[in-house]
Image (cartoon, rainbow over all chains, first blue to last red; front, side, top):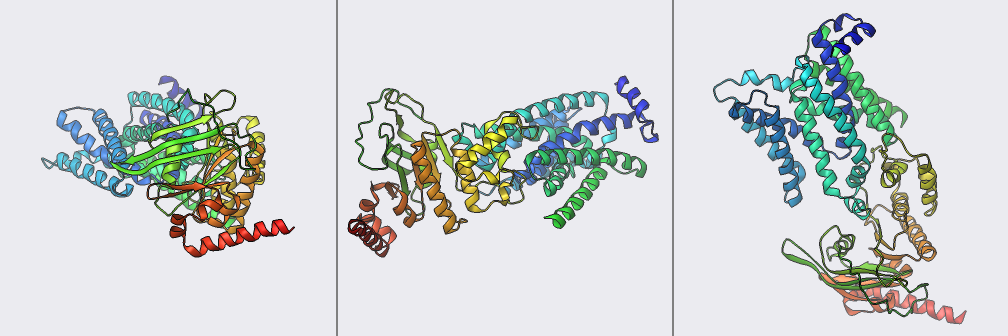
Length: 279
Length: 277
């Protein structure tokens, strides 16, 4: 950690980086946003925006369960619950009784309602409102260590599964005819999403987490002509928005997550205009 | 997929002119599929020779696509699927190529034709890089279906006919024993469809492919198929040459008497003309 601090002091001697919490936050942003950019590409491709939203919402119940069990850091109960709800959605989806949107909607609203009911029991919901908007500046070195591990894991897993996941998402029968285990990859991908969303929620916030997943990829999609460009632009947009959002939120005194999302929205608007003009 | 290792040699005697080797064949025996307790396909027996194009026709919901999916192994089935090779008496593993009706992507998707092939062929993640040889190989593969100029286009920007040719090229790399085609119900113009059939015809001669084609266009089927299998009421009701099938009572009932009469008359004219010439 000390190395990171002195490195920053050396190459970026700016006022906004004076405090240690800003240095931590910067490292956090540099770790989290590329992952969001990467995973977002597939989420947008598969039209899973709504699903990632419901993952965020289910975290509220995860926190509530953590509170009931008396766990101080609710991250584990959140992880457990979001994985549980992911499996539930996939299983119900395979039974093919209602449209996917409806199923996700049902699970998502149930999870939110349950979370609010439990957390507001003694009129004390306001102390959990930090989870709604997130607080990136509260990130500490232990969190950063977890994040770096997840960062490496996600990149590695993404490299291994991406090609087959892409085929499976375009046509399951086609993937099957080439010997791809479609369900395995579908489960792996959604689990990855669940873990990433849950881990980042305390810093980004339930309300805007899915925008952070969707927007960079959606903006990149406007201008990309193949998968490689799609990924490169998406990761770049996520990174640039992340860093500039952090700086701006420092000077404006605003919530970091929301500021980042606003900048990605601007990117989306910009690329959308480019698309209209040149296509 | 069940594979029986000890099978008798294919005893088929070649009676169709297009069957060039006639020594290997794909055998579907007593195929049945049930889902959620209901039987949706039963007692299907098909014998497909290499170089033959077998078309599956039938009314909507009769089980045509179900049969394809069962052959692919996507949904569980009863009965046997065997590939019998002339040389080693049915021990070789059946490899299948599949051309789906459509891909599940919207028109703005940034997936290029090259991306699709690279994703299918390489392990290196395509968002990172392609192996150098990939592009050349993909171009060669696409040339088989006259689609090499589409290599850098986005899949969403292709016309229905172009996409079909790209998917056909993908299914032919590597060359499979059995090629399964699911013809799109809509989205391809008549010319594109004919071009597709012509390409399939040429390919099957060149590579001695066994082809199963689910089709909705009776005219094209009559022109290009060697054998027709008529699926109705959850089973194979009749199969044989186009002449045999189109004079079958049940087929006439399903597709209308007029069509069948016209087909048989045209066919007779063609034969007569051929004799006169």
